[in-house]
Length: 63
Image (cartoon, rainbow, N blue to C red; front, top):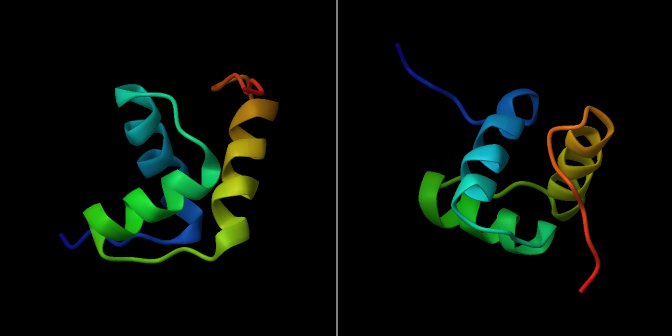
């Protein structure tokens, strides 16, 4: 079965990156492109992070 990286399942990839270390949304977009060969729109990582925060899966802090 071929796995696809899309906006619908991007949250899985974001959580896998955040499991390793904290990261800013713009870093997450770059890491996804490097690791998985797909470049999400700049705003996409921010939208996914906001959704994950609303669901209680991640905490966001300002540094």
